[in-house]
Amino acid sequence: MSSHDSQVDQGKSRKRRQAERIAERASVRLGPTLVKIVLLGLLDAFSVYSAFMLAARRSWYFMAAVIVVALVINWIYWQQGHLAAKYLTPGLIFLLIFQLFAITYSAYISFTNYGTGHNGDKEQAITSLLQAASTKVPNSPSYTVTVVQCGKDLGFAIANDDGEIQVGNAHTPLHQVQAASSDESGHVSKLPGCQVLDFNDLLSRQDEVTTLAVPLSSDAKQGQLKTSDGQTAFVYKPSLEYNRAKDTMTDTTTGLVYTDRGTGAFVAEGDKELKPGWKINVGLSNFTSVFASKQLRGPFGQVMVWTIEFSVISVASTFILGLFLALVFNEPRMKGRKIYRSILILPYAFPAFLSALVWSGLLNEKFGFVNQVLLGGADIPWLHSAGLAKIAILVVNLWLGFPYMFLVCMGALQSIPEDLSEAAKIDGASAWQIFRLIKFPLLLVSVAPLLISSFAMNFNNFNLIYMLTQGGPAQTGTGLNVGSTDILISMVYKIAFVGADKNYGLASAFAIVIFAVVALVSAIGFRASKSLEELN
Picture 1: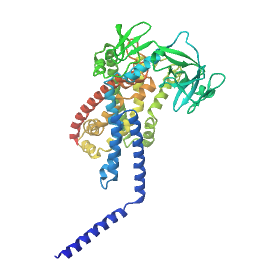
Picture 2: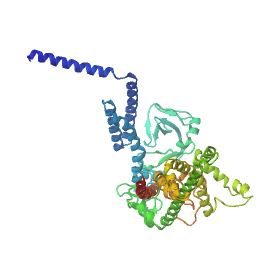
Picture 3: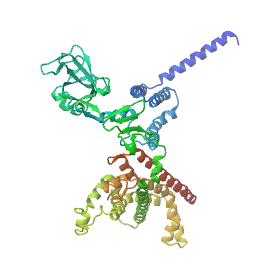
Picture 4: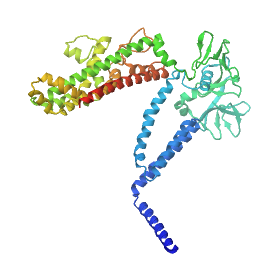
């Protein structure tokens, strides 16, 4: 082949590749491409906004994570091919956000003292202590102030007797400004670059105005100006003094010195502690206190035992009743089976939390339907006696849970071939023997995993407990805010969100313990259920 022919072939090959690329581009549909451009554009805009916000808060790790995720998503969806990655990416992102991040963050919080009085860092705690300890100086002079808004910050403007006007806010001490003017009453009427708040503005922003403190100068010992009416201010000075070199907080009225002992708060002699403190890493302290602290060990043990009892009895009772009804309505000789089946699954059609609220009213001691109508006006404290409340919870949970087991068992029974039963009858087996030796083992193969998941669901059945009894009746003599019918998850909720002292760190430690228990029981259950698979 001559060199001329070779060049001609190369030219044809190049033109063919160009034609293929053009054809490939022409085959791209315009509509989906525009949708992809819009969605990725929105994602990029949100990512850039989030990155700037995180950078402003100095959350460098989260900012880096947002940027990396946005780049990876853009790379995946702008590439040709990678079809599997394009389908899996949304699911993986939601998995990371709603599962792995939640678990990881809960685990992190469980190793801290995060809770009431320990919500922020040390600098925030020092600022809060100094502001909270601020008291009015006796015989303080009265300042005529005007509340102004400069940018986003509220501040005070003061007109001195010699005509000078000063302005300041919570972050900037009072300083002189030019080109401002005041009226005859001494209030500032004009301040360039700032808005003077009128009476209506003061009323609508009353909380912001009354909590505003403006330093008189850069020397904190000079005190701050505060106002209660937006018209007149007085000098306040903190009764605490912070020594940054020694890292101590001194009460100027008593001379008591508070030091940082590494417990997340300033502590003085006699373990007297200043609040608020700050968040620190406490290691395994929350976990050890769950099992070692006398204050927590007793209530935790009682709640753990009741949680297991509640879960086991609930699963067993709903399964037995559901299986019995499934056997009854699976019998061909039963008349009106479709109607009965429809009625039986009604409890499953109502929201569980709404049903629990309805049952709470039905079981009311004074006005409930059960006492007044069914029991002829009896005065039975269904929800106010520890033992009766537990029985009420188990009965209501049976009413709520048996339709699910009924449907599951009905489906499993119908999947068992009738030939097996017919062959057993020919061999002389009774109905009970057919059920016990053939149907029940085969049914367990299908429902065993569902029984395990039902146990896990009841172990964390917060809706029923909180809507029916709110964990009550209350237990006295315990160190925790727990009731007789509280299960672990409702106890965790109370520790984290109910009462004056919220302890998110301890609640997270309890949540980790619950996760470990459920995971252990599920693992044992699934391991045991594998032996049933051999029946197939």
